[in-house]
Length: 217
Image (cartoon, rainbow, N blue to C red; front, side):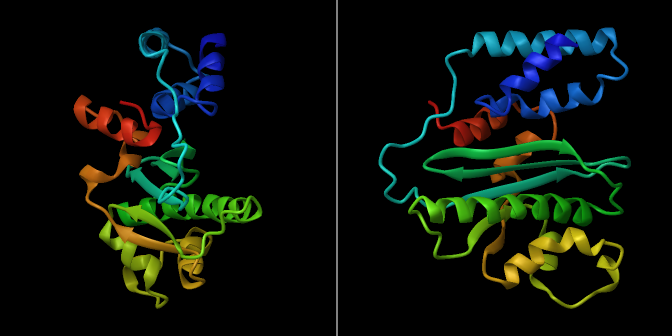
């Protein structure tokens, strides 16, 4: 238990690269197993081997003073996982990997839930940056790799396939209409939030995503 607690402490401070792994371990705290213990040890070993790795922000904000976000989900027959990252100054300033509260009926619903969760964080960050002297004059781009979710975020009309999506999960649509967020399609291979929703079998793709997030070489 204390091992998981230590990992949970590390994730929100500087180790976004283990957010997904630690999130899965945290879900199993109520029924710990030997497999969970071994998995936690592997995460600790990874952190020890990469202890010099952290988040690096660019000193020159020219071209980097604009928020940019990516969101994703891994649709599951049970509770899907939401993952998103927000970039500013060349690296992540906010990220999340957590189990969704409700069971999604489709991959589009799971993706729109993740996008809406990210969009709410963008509202806060846009306000904070404005107070700090970095107003976001244009809608913040939110990259999503599900075409249905992109369409749903733009279309204010109800359609048969989206009627089951609860209105509270369509916050991203409201923010898009208010010109605060612009949802754009991105190929799955380029969606860096993918590393926050599932175990990636392709280690090179995982490294590419976290390098983009944390800005290290």
